[in-house]
Image 1 (cartoon, rainbow, N blue to C red):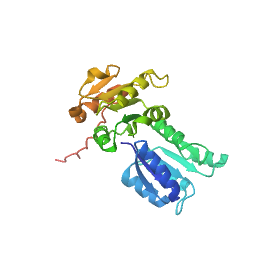
Image 2: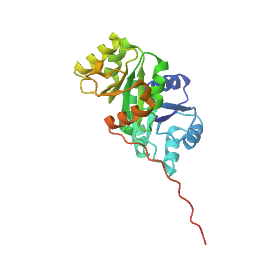
Image 3: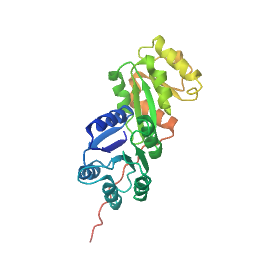
Image 4: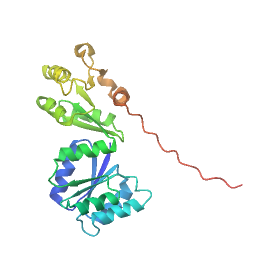
Length: 250
């Protein structure tokens, strides 16, 4: 699960942005001032940082400058977020190494999240299931540093959710295999905006869902779902770093 550090001192904005990022599948850590932001960056090693400019203790520009000066942290993409949007501010942010500059209120939250996702190469999928409880094993099976798993638990809103986010892949949990589930698959495969999306159905009776692009048995979610999703999205398993042993002096 990709991890975003949100460095923002306004509690209201913190809550709104955190809720949206989590709904999109991100893990979110928040910091309320510049010094705390640097500390949490060192501790958490997030995959991306969303950084306000007007912050207590250290402003966003100083935070960005210090992050870029640290070889261990300079690789993390930083997205500036601010009420300040003058040409000078934007130029300063980019000169210090910001990946993008978002002016508060000029873009929707969905646009901001989509740009972060695209800039960082994260892939998003949509899991459609009847409840948050039934979504847990799906999300647990899909933990990957480049993979975001958004969840829709209201079947009547599934098509709207897919069309709004346009994920790279859709998973339908067909337990129970009711009329709503069949309708969603039919709509996905006929609507102009979604007909090319690969669809995986979790079912023990795949013959009923012949239009799907892949199937996973209910009892095999932990074993079969992840490799199938990664293959369809063109992702590979992350390579774990092998610790280097110090040379032995003889």
